[in-house]
Length: 232
Image (cartoon, rainbow, N blue to C red):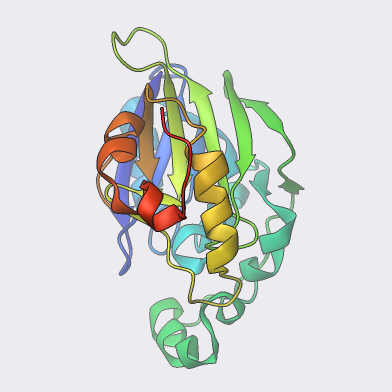
């Protein structure tokens, strides 16, 4: 598996390009604010051909360049249907107080949906990779984690693009519109703790981590925070 990544925009959201190998078809995951130039540079450097855009949720720092990337290469984009509205109405995901800030960040960019917009279901085969789509609401109703197999590593056997659900040492906030703390707790107890220890976690912000480390040390995955959970 080939991976390239870079943080983009004022929120430093991680954009990922994933492929079966360099020089092949790839997917672009979470191209956010100011991510287009980084995507084009990575595509050129590694000889990649984008064939799809995958969005872990609809917040503007993860989707701002999605339509431009999808239209540039003539490819579909996938998002969970619950977050579709944020593709054209970012204020709905951040609240009315964000309107002035978003105007400064986006300038005169007109937000539109990609021509070929599709919605995640349970799985997806694209760019020679098979993704399990794990619906993981709490940060946003449309949050998903995208898990794909990893071969050739002696300790890890999966890669999970966790978006803003799980970070190294932390989790996604739930105080923005669409966030729900109780729902996030259910997601952490279920979908997150169900991830194997052998999974590499590639989050929407910050450094990558591994599930074994998060299970052992992330304070938000411990029984005293979650109100009693099973552990491995």
